[in-house]
Image (tube, rainbow, N blue to C red; front, side):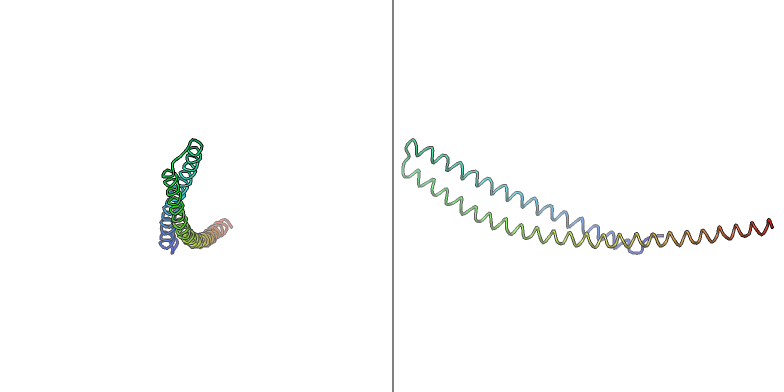
Length: 144
């Protein structure tokens, strides 16, 4: 006795697995972009600290302009990185919703399978009880 929707259940499970894999890849990309942004922030802080140290010991205007240009470029890159992270986060949330929906569909099919198996077991037990009753009845009639 098998569940009549077993194929659908397997397909739902495979779809869920693929969606989770996709979500994992998007999440890894998201983390990579977060790390890149943090690297830029760290570089900016290091640059500011170096500039402050050089100001104390005397610094040329050209060097200050270089630091300023680096700072502006890093800020522009950080703004781009924020936009990238926002887009990835949107994709991640959409994929998460797809995964939740796939999990819900799979779980629905699993519940149907459990109910079907319980129904089959009850029918089987009822038939077994009927056979045992028949055997007992026949034995009783023989001994009587």
